[in-house]
Length: 199
Image (cartoon, rainbow, N blue to C red; front, side, top):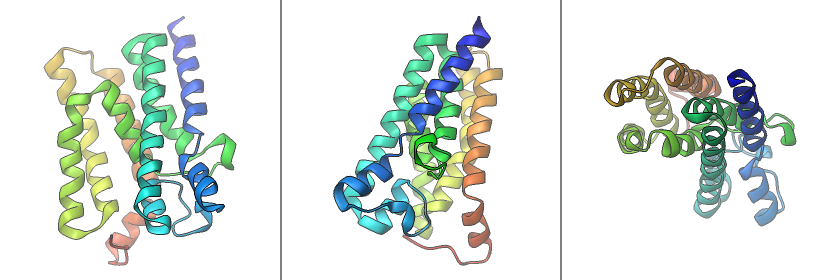
C-alpha cells in the first residue's frame, strides 16, 4: 500500500510540475513564448533576462507554489516520505513538462517550494549560500549550483537533529541535487570556460 501511495504522489507531483509558469506568464503578458529566447528555459532567470523583474517574480512565485502544493499533497497522501517523493517528481515535471513539449526549467524555484513545506528551517541558510556567490560574482547559475550541492548534506544534518529516519529524505534530496546539476550542465561548462552570462 505504501508503494502505491508513493507512486500516486509521484504521478500527481509530476503533473503539477508540468504546469510551466514561465510559458503561461509569457503568453498571457507578452503574447510570446519564453522558450524562444535566451537559454530556452522556462524558469525565473530566463524570464528576468527576457521580460525583466515582474515576469521573473511571477514565474518564481508560481513555480514555488506548485512545488509547495505537490509536497503538501504528497505529505497528506503518504506522510513525510510522500512529501519527499513528491519533491523529486515535481522537479522532474518542471524540467520535462508533459503539457509543454518536455521543455522546462532548471528546478531551483521548485526546490524552494518543497523546502518551504518539508524543511523550512533550511530555507534561510540555503538562500544565503545561493546569494553569496551571486553577489560576489554576478553568476546566478553559480549560486544555484552551490545551493543545490549544499541541499543534500543539509537534509542529512536536519534528519540527524530531528530524529527523522534519513534514508528516504536524503535519497530524494540527492535526486533533486543531481537533477539540478544535470539541468545546469551547460552553465557548468560555460563557467569552466569563463563564458557564462552575468546578471
